[in-house]
Figure 1 (tube, rainbow, N blue to C red):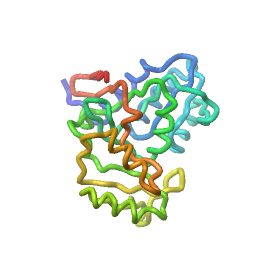
Figure 2: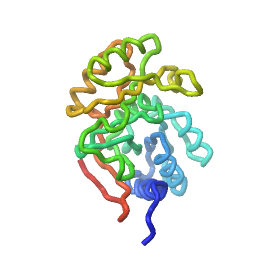
Figure 3: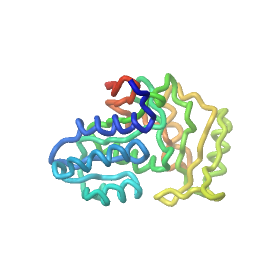
Length: 226
């Protein structure tokens, strides 16, 4: 049996996620390379859904290009399901997200949804969050203060750059990436950091955790229920 590449695993879970899409409803769609595989798969059943709510300009563009109607979040009361990837996910369904800088909109859509289905390859499953740099969206004038607070917790915080200057999110903010943390209490951590002045969103998804994870493995798609 040929070895599946990481790209193959992303394709597998993207297709598997179609099983959670409710016909006739609007589906929540996340951001990233794995989600792009889901969007491509979603195009095959676009006539069976009402449309999508998207967490980023990039996903919106991809959805529209494939002929899928995209709604503003304010046009929709609730979503039956939100399909998105994760930078890492633990065995309770808690996640770190934001590698694609869309964490704020992702958290908003997750909060609108009755079910969060995470799609990822098996390299993203961890025992304790903190293996991947933690993204935090920050109002630019607060960046220095937020960096100092993370350093006081024992982490190393750096402003994410793009082309040598601070990356600007779809919301007009900056991203601080934090390494060196072990997030053993995700709920407490998310609650605490969210209160810091200038923090828009912290990339720990504990209150908006996944209920299901479709994990791409060498032997196929493994389903984890939380």
